[in-house]
Figure 1 (spheres, rainbow, N blue to C red):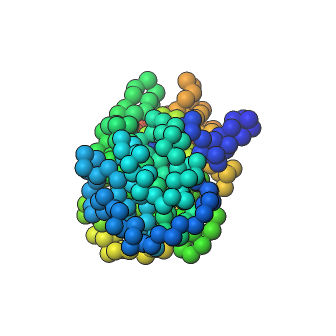
Figure 2 (cartoon, rainbow, N blue to C red):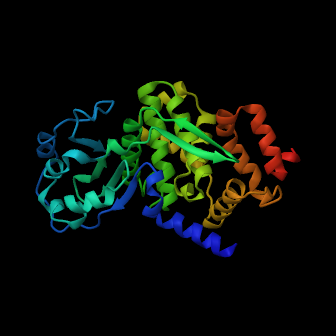
Length: 328
């Protein structure tokens, strides 16, 4: 048991590439600059191929800058990576982390990744690879495999990666100066939820992301590092789409919802990981296993289970799996 917890915590805290094929993207810090670049914001804007103005169109938009707080980020399609990276200041192009070869290796089978830059104008680079976007998320419950169709994944993936950079810009003000890898991931999904509310005026895609994160966890407990479902659920239960639209600035939204978020320790996360693995990977159920974590897990997973299995089958399954459910 102890060795399993240690392995799970290491996987969580390191956000290893091994679990990346099941995740939206990958989060990379590119490190310090070699030399400052004497390029102004206005000069950068003149090199923009296209500026983000709503929904992404992969067929047209191969390289463009987007605003990130007081800086800008460069968005590159993997298919036009060389041309896109050439838009960066020379000081960034000289860094190994921003070399085309290094980026291609790092992207691998992921649908997107973000590289963080320490620069007075550039916040980072987002690389998108729509060819690897998932059309559905699957997971096995008992002997049956369930699939969740995924809509608008190119756009949602992009917003998640933008969220990484935007939240980094807010560290030390609205957000703490130090964040864990897990916090970075669920905060990126909170940004995604906010963008969905602003652009679609309804929350179907936010619930899709909630169900996706739950089903990914059911499929593999290693996906706990990206399990933003608890945080998404808190916001979705507190606000409707119209209320979220009143937060016209992300900073205001984050200031309102961040204090509502749970503050789980690495030990807490290890317990969730162990409970999830024992529940969905074991042949024989142990209803009393980690009973003190069961109610929290049931609360977050139940909407997704009902979405996949129906309400009656979900209740039957929960009573068979969890001691807490039998005592409720």
